[in-house]
Image (cartoon, rainbow, N blue to C red; front, side, top):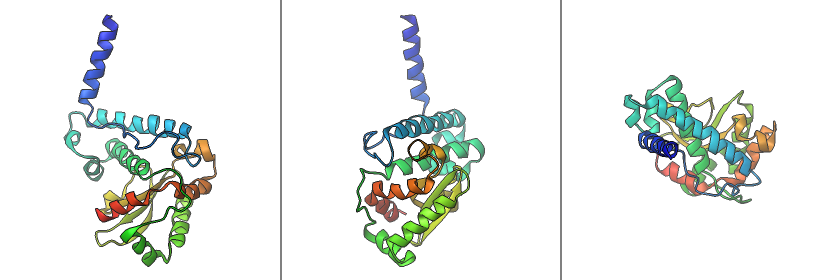
Length: 212
């Protein structure tokens, strides 16, 4: 009885102190299959992302970063603090851009027009984006990012880096850390990247573009 009470007390203390929390997914663990499996969601979201959240709460406790949002921590910190905050921010944007698979998912609104204007067509954009992700050496992210003027860029970022560090707005990202795809796609990174187009919720990406 005493042991149970102590466990409950420690849980209350921990969750009261913890500022940063694991993102709650807006879809079920099987919703993205067959592109991303339930098993990958369990490991990628439930373990890897949870680990970054736990690490950041420990690192930020008792520092000025404890009261900042993720974007400000990424802009102003360095070392482990920046890495863990960056990974949380990146993963949150990654997981929140998905919806159930659709074979005809395409950009909408002003973003669609900007993509056509800058890349010639959506298909050309897809090709360049996948090439950037496939060519990134090691672990990292490929991003579609926007300047305040609406201009779009495709960029590779190593490890936990994020467009906000350059003053740009992150719109769309493909995670090319192996833990994001290896259970489902093994070493076939280009196949994984090409499959992700089926689960992009372009309304979410358009809202990010409008909010820059």
